[in-house]
Length: 228
Image (cartoon, rainbow, N blue to C red; front, side, top):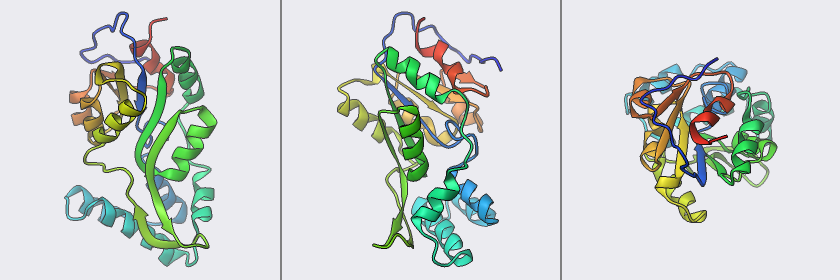
């Protein structure tokens, strides 16, 4: 499918150092890694999701309720069990190609996600990302889930992690671009000079983006950020 521009201005010879990717709905070709587990386990968390959207519960409580549902349905579930379920989560086409092309231009590629660490780690390893940060599952010494999540990424301010990676790689906002699909990615866009809404799921991210790309392959972002 063709890329669709939204108030896009050519970058000319602008050189980027850092590419920031959201994961769920962008690299993962599904709404989220969390909801993939619920689907695979036959769990309906729609009431909790509604409560989260209505701000009746926070990120930590939303994670806690999801994990507790898994434990209630499958007592003794371990972090390895969850990782095995996540092995089959679908990913978008073109990830390796995209990272390879960005690396050719010396652009570091990172993942910042409120999704699950196991999926972020697998995609990063398989596709060559330089770094990643995502949420995780608390477990005991034997790997059994405790019922709590580990909140490594605050979905209300994903921009703070962009800044940390800019500091890590000694670069700036002007030399960073980001790819996201929902309103929770807007704080990342604010810490970048260019934001791409990839297969967006809400109007807020479209309004806050410099370009919109609707495609079955993530490689369709490349013409917006590198000059062949």
